[in-house]
Structures are given as structure tokens and as C-alpha cells.
Length: 234
Ligand code: FPP
Figure 1 (tube, rainbow, N blue to C red):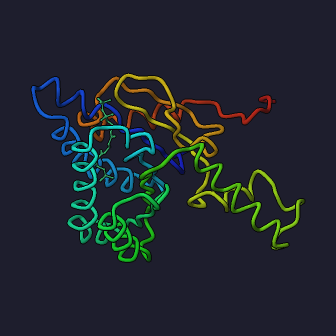
Figure 2 (figure 1 turned 90 degrees about the horizontal axis):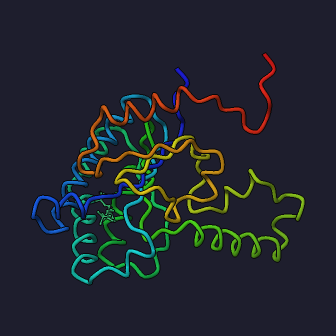
């Protein structure tokens, strides 16, 4: 019944989850990775077609070198070691974000998982890595200006819908955005795609977010009357 087609998750609170337990922040990211595995599988089993997750923002490079390196190593571990499982689960992995200043071994692991899952059809897992929503709109505009200058498209071809083709991934707009970790902000996540998203804030730190919490967020979405700016007539 009225399932969101595309869900986005800002997986916040890994660090605080760890600190609260007297652990290093890295332990929170590790537990967050395990949580994501369960949530992605659950979303797929529910019939969600697109899941976008915020793994690393362009601003996250401001963190300590130790934390950035830990996160990159963790991502490589996931991309390399969870490969067989993601393939078996028929989930296609794609990425959004700038590749240029990522470590070479991270790019290799990304390319590996893209290639190995490219024919999977049940669900698309879009991992936002070195990602910023403003940056995405700027990068899309540069590509669009190029196509316009080269005569590949005409000015009349530029519409709200056609602009999606210039984003990092051509995915449907976000129906439901979930943010864990108590904060109520958008943090530069999928700004173009969330133009009409319902927003669900959870007070749980991401490592504590369970399958039943995803169910709750979907139920919240299903209760919404989505009019897309029109007026209900019945
Ligand atoms: C935000 O919590 C979380 C991140 C910056 C990293 C998210 C990464 C994962 C869940 C690891 C696994 C990811 C994949 C794609 C396999 P925070 O560190 O900002 O927490 P805080 O606000 O409590 O400090």
C-alpha cells in the first residue's frame, strides 16, 4: 500500500552512539555499517526500489585524518567483503558524489562493486560518498552548460524532469527522507531530489535504528496526504 519508491537516509549519530558507551567514534561507524546492511536488506524485502544513504559528505573531510582514514577503510571493507551478499540479494549499488579527491583504493573498491552488481534488479542502493547536494547541482549545471554549448540540447529541452539526467544518478525524486540522531537539518543531502519529500526525524542514533524503525517511518509516510501543491477535491 502506497510504498515510497525512493527513501533517503541521513545516517547520523554513529559518533555519539560510541562516545555514550565509552568507545572510539570508529566503533560507532562500524556498528553503523552493520545497521545499514540490515536496513538495506529490509527495505529491499519490503519492495522499496531505491535507497539513498549519506555515507560521507564533502564536509566530512574536515574531520581528523584518523577518522577519515578509518571511514574510508571501512567503506573498502564493505565494498569488497559484502560483495557476494549484495549480489545474492539482487541489490544494485551505485554512487553519488565527487570521485576526484578520493583515495585510489576507495575508487577501485567502488568500481568493483558497481561492476559486480550492475545487472541486479530488485533495488538500487545509492551510496552518497564525498557527496554534497549543492555540489551536485553545480556539477550538473556544468554538464548541462557543456551540452548546451555543444548544441547537444536546446534551451527548451531544459526542464525540471530533464535536469535529473545531469545529476550524479538519474533516480526518481525522494519520497521519504529519514534522519536519525536527533538533529533536524538537511546537511546538504539530495537537495534537488527532496523537493517534495516527507521528512521523518528519529531520535535514535543510527546504530540503534532497527528494521521496525524503518517500518515506523514508512507508516508515517503512508499517513501523509501528498497533494503536490494541488487542492483535494473529494
Ligand atoms: C554520521 O555520524 C555518519 C557518518 C559520517 C558515516 C556513515 C557511515 C556508515 C554508516 C558506515 C557504513 C557505510 C556504508 C555505505 C557501508 P556522525 O559521525 O556524524 O555521528 P555524530 O553526529 O554522533 O558525531
